[in-house]
Image 1: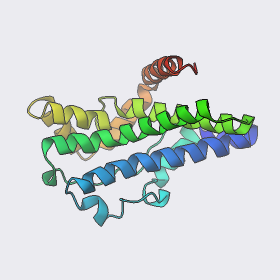
Image 2: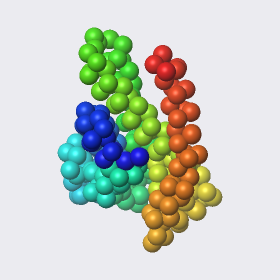
Image 3: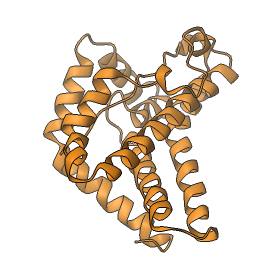
Length: 205
């Protein structure tokens, strides 16, 4: 179900979820850009991506998909792997999910140490849930996701080469989006199971 349905049924929830998504996706892409820049690749800075300005990271079509279909994407950060070592590429790939994990950790701390109104509790729980989902989803070893780039760095001569060759194909993005849509049930089960485990682990499930 897309976010657009919340506009009439629960406008406040729509605003909270949309705001949390903008925050989380922006930090995710900024983390990729910042780490690549720090490790010597000028490409993200050349494209104006080393910034926390959401307008530089959000993709119009990806945002539209979030509104109408319930899943979408931000604008990938351009990175020139020739400017990075093998482990530098791994660090850049891992930076996005790690940024979401960091936000989830900070949010968890705030949930435990601050007094809350019903609104603040709803906001923090939404931010926590979204960042857990983003971290888990992006760590899946699906081509074009961060998990596949991590695998490519760990196994550069075998599976990694195949993943990179697939990503270079003209229609790889469309194929991956179709796959994610078809496999949305199992993927949702994985996300829900891991998210539920983490929430129970920190005493919020």
